[in-house]
Length: 413
Image (cartoon, rainbow, N blue to C red; front, side, top):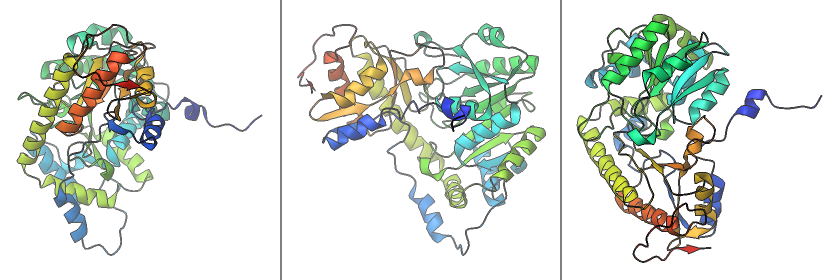
């Protein structure tokens, strides 16, 4: 018998938003400027007050904290949630090592190996990895680009519920689609969970970033949701602090909380310096979100306007987060994304995007779709979209011949 890695290790997928990274690095080594629209890493500065809090901290020994996080940070988080219109107690908040650990803890706590988790697709690609790690099977219901990726009909959820189904997982506002689920949609899902005794896992990483005056509804604010709802949260996107690696799992279900706490004790404690960053973040005024929200909305408007003007491109208007899903007139979006980095440049510039097939589980879905993260300043974002516009003119696998645009200086290399 030969030595081999585990089956879960073999099944672990390549990150859908990093799979083209080697090609991007090679393009940079050739001297090309690569605009990265593939991953949700904003270029907005992390608030200086967060770094200042760490610099000023009087720490002689960076010690373990309580497995659930420091009392100081958890108390401040209750104040944050209160300002967000969500009433939770300190004892209902478990601080995690980023939202990633919150997702993993939720799956380990609410589902057994072999159980099924219903997720609307397209979905955040890392959910697949967490499900594999937990031994959980993802079952999908498919949202479509034609209605902006709205929640699929409840009948679609009903059709895939089996005795092994234990939870429904939703991201609101959604990554990768930017769709913001309405209170009515969430209430209908909760009713389904109550009817079939399922957990409702709600990933709310982008809560603050809804546009056109909309507000996201937290699953914690659904009447009667106490036994069913588990919220997964993070400071990564909220404060442009992706490297802090601090998140939270929030639930009023005491059994779920206690079980998740046991997993938290296993890894001892969340990041100490990260929690100091998080405490300082809670003190930021609401104007911080107002300014960022306005900036992201301007970026969204630019991205949607440019994309919708490109022949053959289908692009719904996302209501939140900072992603847009678009259908491109190409034979295969992954092949196109690779070609952008290996064979194309416009004024010695190109872009990196995320092929959308990595956000679907159903084979062949998303093959002509991409996710673009509008996380660059308006000037760079506009330049990246100009590269895309020119690339679609000359890509060998384009599926229609678009009309020419001004100054077609793109070159295939």
